Image (tube, rainbow, N blue to C red; front, side, top):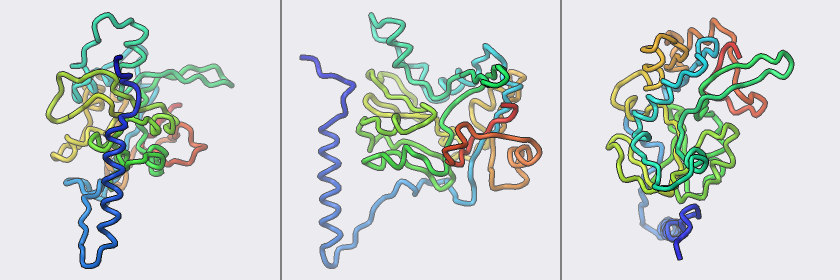
Length: 257
């Protein structure tokens, strides 16, 4: 019988459970110094920075998908091939998407707004709270990520995310980029192009593509730096959080919504 690939990997769950138990035993042994490599020890991340984004929905063109395409290329998502014989419906439902274009309708005015929606990089991310293996974590610079080596594919984080911004990899990943390792059975999401940032870049792929296409709807930068373009834009313009009622203090804000 073929194994259901949508189920959590119980062997990995068991492995992590034993690992946790072993670590717990080590901490109570006298004279033992336990060194733990925490998820917040990324080289390049600094608590002096909080990366964030401001998106002007008035500049987000209907039908434009350059930000989505750039994200797919940057992270090797476009290398994933649809399994032979899979229906359009199932492929579209299961294909990973780190950014997707959505439309918001104002119930009072009826006005429809286009905007890209991705991980909102919350200060208080629900996905991190529910993760049983600490695979979902927030870096000191505010980027919310998934450690694929710890992810057991339970998808609690996907259920907890109010923005439906995470994807689960259902199929084998036969081709991928060294800079963006991916694997079947893991959850993934936008990470603000963390690899680029850690290498010294100050922009994301979606921002670059939007600007190159002449829209300039996306501004990215350090929210803690009052002289950064994004900080000054947020000071000048009225912006909103999506689902501000949840009080998650998102790192992604929108204007003209």
